[in-house]
Length: 491
Length: 115
Image 1 (cartoon, one colour):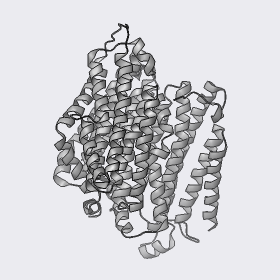
Image 2 (image 1 turned 45 degrees about the vertical axis):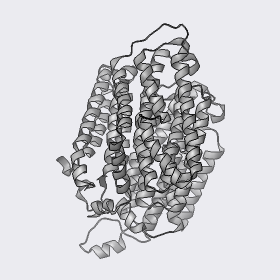
Image 3 (image 1 turned 180 degrees about the horizontal axis):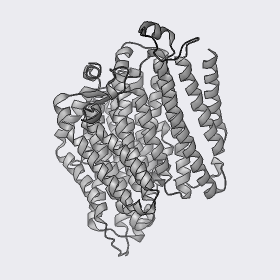
Image 4 (image 1 turned 60 degrees about the horizontal axis):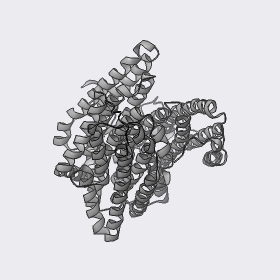
C-alpha cells in the first residue's frame, strides 16, 4: 500500500480527513453545498469498506501494528489494530455511515459546515481507537472534541450556544487534565508509546503514577459522562442536531470507554484501587442516570441520562475485575452503541415531524406509522434488556458476573434495569399511544427509515444469536491485558 | 525548579479563574492560562541547563545524547499550542453568539436549559 501503510483500516482515517478538508473548502461556494452530503456519505462508505478489508488480517494475524514513517517502535508513532480496535472501528464507521445517511434529509442549511465537522469527528474517534501512542491519543481526542463542540452549537439558537460553550469549557478542562497526566508520565518514564509504557510500568507503584492514572481516567471519564463528570451531557445532547446526538451518544462515549479500558486495564494493569473506584462510580452512575431519566419531559434529555446510566453498567462490570465482568462490559459497549444511536435517530425522526422534543406535546401533534412505532419499541425493549434483544445478551453476562461478586449487587442491577424499562415505556406511551384524534401520519423519507431498520435488525439479530458477540467479546477481553499487544508493537 | 513552581502557579491561577469567575471571556482566559502552565511543565521536563539544540551535527551519538535538550516535549507543546489556539478561537466565536442571543456573557444569567 501507499506510504508504507500495511493496515487497511488506518486508511479510513486518512480518507475521512481528506474528505473533511475538501468539504470545508467546497463550502465557500453556495453551489457546492448540496454535494457536501453526497461526498461525505460516499467517503463514510469507503471508510467502512476499508475497515471491512482489514477483518481477515486481524482474524489471521491477531494484533497488527505499523510505525508511521518507519521510525522504530518506542520512538515513532505506532498504530495498533487488535480485535477491540477492529470491532469498535466497525461500529464507529458503520453507525457513522447510517447517521450521515440519516442527516441527508435532516440537515437542510449550511451542509458543508456540518459534514466537514462530521468527517473530522469520525476521523478523531477512529484515531482514538487506532493509536498506540499516548500523545497521539490526546491529539485525536482533541480533534473529535473540537468538532463536537462546534456541532453541538451548530443550530446557533439560545439552547445550542449555551450548551456549546458549557461543553467547550468543561471539555477543555478535561483534556488539560489528560495533557497533565501525559506530562507526568513522560517526566517519570520517558516514553509515550503505550506498549513500551506497559513494560516500564510493570511492578511500579509510585504516587506520581497513581496521580497520572487518576488524571487520565478522569479526563476520559468526562467523554463518556461517568457520574461526577456528567453535567455537560444532557445539555449537549439535547441541543445538538439529532444525527450528531446519535454519534455522540453512541460512538463518542464508546471511544471514551475504549480509552479508559486500554489505559487502566491494558497498560496500567488494572490496579485494585482503580477497580474499586470503577465499581462505586459505575453503580452511582447507573442509579443517578436512571432516576434522573424518569423525571425528564424532553426525549433527547432522557436519552442522554440513559446513556449515563448505561455507561455505569459498563464501568461497574469492568470494576468487578473478573473475566466474566470484562466480557459483559465489552459486549455492552457494542450493544449500547447500536441501541442508543437507534433511539437518538428515532428521536430525530420524531423531532423532524413533530417540531418539538417535549414528550408530552409530541403525541398530541403527530401520529406515526406502524414501522416507526415498532422500531422505537425495539429500541426501548433492547435498552431495558428484555430477552431476545441484544441488550439482554450483554446484561445477562453482567447479572451473572455481579452474582459472583454479591447477590445484593445483582438485585441492584436488576432494579436499575426495571427503571430503564419504566422510562422507556413512559416515552413510548407518551409519544405513540397517547395520540388522541390527531390523524396526521407523516411519511418518513427512505434515507431516514433505512438506517433505523438496519439498526433495529441488528438489535434483534444480535439478541437471537448472542454466541457470536459473546465469543468476540471473550477474544477482546483476553487480548486486552496480554503480552500479545506489547509483543506485536515492540517486536 | 523555578519553572516547575511557575507552571504550578499558572495552573492554579487558571483553575481558580475557571472556578471563581462567571464571565465567559474570563473563563476562556483561565483555560488558556491553565494550558500554558501545562506547556511550561512539558518544556521544563525536557530542559537541560547549558544544553545544545537537538540537531545532530557530529557523528558522535553518545555525546549528542548528553549535550542536547530533549526535543520531544517541544514538539508535543507545539502541537498542543495549535490545539489550544483552535479551542480559544472556537470559544470566542461561540461567546459572540452567546452575547447576541442572551445579551450577557455571565454564565449565571444564562437560563435556556431546563430539565
